[in-house]
Length: 219
Image 1 (cartoon, rainbow, N blue to C red):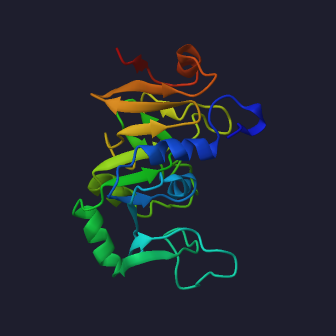
Image 2: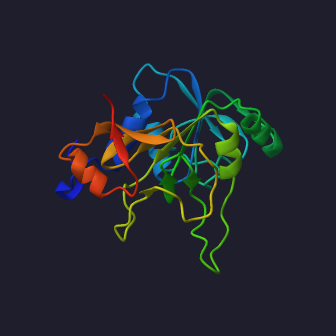
């Protein structure tokens, strides 16, 4: 797969593929809105992943073909979806009982900021007049066993999204297990950040320059 506009690092599809490769067979997974949704397109052949959406479905299928959409089948982001064989519908409250009861294995979310200790800020910048949009994020980060974050390494104005301390309102404290960006895959371990993999053309020094927190290398 070619990189978009000869940009250093991974493109959006390659980022999503990296996440998909780390999701084990048989996992129950909730995908956030936007970039996390791409992960569903890259599950390796022969691996079964059961997708959950908090508006009341377990067994979400791929995006429907044009003209085959069912207006009554949507995910939490209000996008048209399909179901797989054996899918189950349930009440919204039961869906959150599954989340809060730790029955979902993995959640993939986008973010505004992640701290070096795994704090997550992904629902508001805190600016006056901003529209609250926390949705189910706080329930997900407190109830799901493993939280994976997929995001561009820097914001549109070039500021690092991975920081020493979050300045935006928190979604959860010390909840993130791994961060997947266009520049690297970074594990959160023992309140520190460890670089597991660098994207093509990215050096550790370059990555550190683009990061607002100290990075560590595995020995």
